[in-house]
Image (cartoon, rainbow, N blue to C red):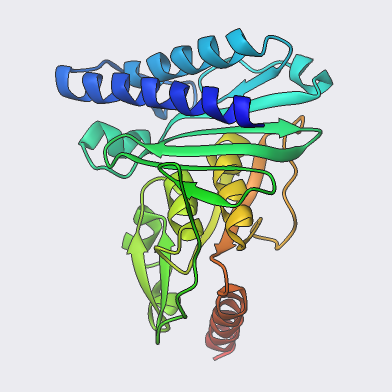
Length: 266
């Protein structure tokens, strides 16, 4: 997978440079059918990535948030799963919590993953069985759990008080991009993340591989393994823990569940 990773890293850097240029010079904003925003930067990054990856690997399939989907990819052995800008709303506001997220899936299994934050110049990468790299340098998470768990959460839900019970037991930080969030968890910058939203494969594919290759755990919000290149791209949230933090994250979730159940009975 060395060739695929090398080509992918160059492609995401190229796309990232273009995204930063548009952030500075100006971009257009549109509304999709679901009323969510998309910018000319998202579309330009998507174009750059598709031309580079499918140009080099024409037999591979393509699944991207910013490309029309079709069933042809389901018959492909390998499929690129792409979010040109995960965290578009934060990109639009100039908040450096967005990322380009790309994974390569083979027979429903993740084999290559890259999450790149152009604003911070952090490029997290991995191939199956190779561990985690940050800007090309292998990293390992070996520091112990602190007195309070550090959890990255959806900013809007955190602001609405939906994680109030969690905040009594852990230090909770808002983070705009779930792809970037998973990369930070993989690198040990936080102990874990809990996301109970309806997500899509492109939001989390690369990040899930990063967490797994770092030695952590990533699963859906029902605590089930996640398969990729599925007919329906929706994923039931994601729960992830950095290496050594799985038991602590599960204990936190169980504690919160008991407290909330007791509260309802009162």
